[in-house]
Amino acid sequence: MTDQQGPDPRTTVVVITRDRRPELLRTLRTLRELPERPPVIVTDNGSRDGTPEAVARLFPEVELLLPGRNLGAVGRNLAVRRVRTPYVAFCDDDTWWDPGSLRHAADLLDAHPDLAAVTARIVVEPSGEEDPVVAELRDSPLAGPDWLPGPALGSFLAAATVIRAADFRAVGGFHPGLWLGGEEELLATDLLTRGHWLCYVPELTIHHAASAARDSTERRVLGVRNTLWFTWLRRPWRSALRRTGHLLRTVPRDRASARAVAEAVAGLPWVLRQRRPVPADIEARIVALEEARRHSTARRYVG
Image (cartoon, helix red, strand yellow):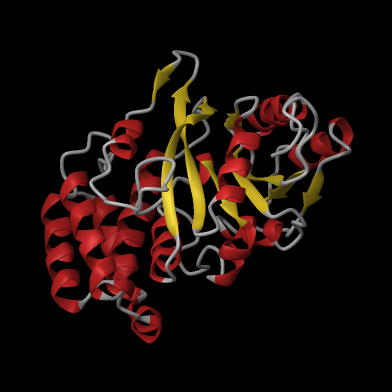
């Protein structure tokens, strides 16, 4: 355990951004003020609003990566390659960590080598209320070993998670095929398949002030498409067909859903080439989560 007042050298914060200069600058200001003083790496996914220039001028201590195009979630992979600390705290451009949370997360990961990632409680700003997804994390139906510092999870939220860098790299990071939108589920499943654990820790807190610069319809297209791709990549065929049927019956019947399904079908050649069904014990966890999520108000394909 490190000095509880001074800087903590164990965790690097990784942020991806695109055309959200005001939100990103606010997040970087809060990160700069954290007692842990974490190094910060920002991947700019092709912003055209002056974001890179503002970061370079106002936050010279931040390592800024400029791939020149929109890499989506893979922008995090690019940043993690530069990380030299044992742990990575993911952070979106409209989220920021509470003082002390990064230190506590690192303490937990230090103490439990089989724990790959810890996910924080999410507080919505400016209301100060918990995000609806918190109830799903807190009431996870998965059983875990007694040593876990919180409820076992089957996935995580990239905007609110501290992860072991070596484990992230070992599974290849976020899959480039999924690009963005529910990309965490595939990575989390691959971590679980390797024998690692994920958990929710309510003592960790991250704040989320949702950016107005978002396209909810496009997010839904990506979410539905990637859910189908994950299902076909990792679920046994019987489960994959059942899950596909349920999804097609329950998504809104509109152009966005039709486009998502068309994109998913168009990706079938690469999906089938990379298909690797999970073992029975991991599939049992996915089934348990699937049932719980059917009643979740935090997971609705809307927009």
